[in-house]
Length: 269
Image 1 (tube, rainbow, N blue to C red):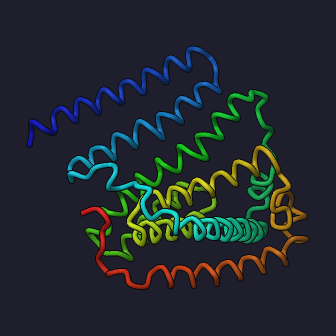
Image 2: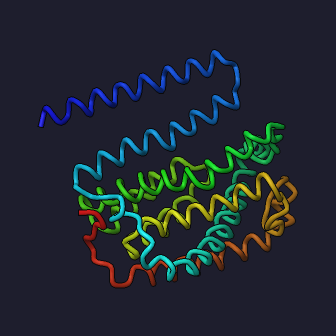
Image 3: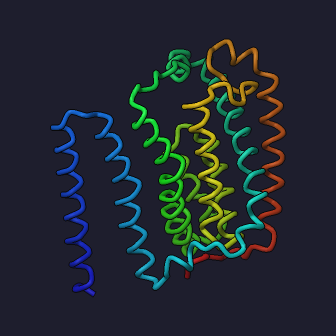
């Protein structure tokens, strides 16, 4: 056992040292865009591969047993519908959050609503878009659903495992409530399908829409989009209706997806 742990420890130490060295060299080069892209790639590729390879190898699980194309077609239409509902919920709950903060922290709301200019470097925008829309969803689903959810379900059971995993996932995202609900849906989708590809596709579709809205078409879903303090009041009705409807539909979907699931069920044993 000690002999097995030693090579992993050395490999981990070498990985950390390599990351520190790369970061130092990039800082010396003085290109903040390149530095940002490389660090994102390290965060979304090197670290997840390290974590997941250890977890799956320890359990003797092969990649084709975790992600596969068989049976995924029947989940494509539900994934499209879930993507739209989650987007509507996230945008409307974000409006509610900002509206609530106006009474106590108006300066913070103004900070959130201040538009950030896009860099002129097209390659940087393209690389960031690919990382956010493709690489990040794969990495996050492998870590949060593939590793963390399975581990927590083995320890605490189905619903506590999903709840804790979703809470941890939401902490790392700005829109906490939107991210939490997304994580619950993604977890149920994974457990229900037994295929990590299902939540990966959901996550990728969600992030792709976010990239499109940020980089290509800022008027996308304009009837819900809040870009100024004035929008918090003029778009209150559509956001409130969207929030109520999407919440009800999501609760119904969660109830439907939960049917037939065992209380203690881990996809990876």
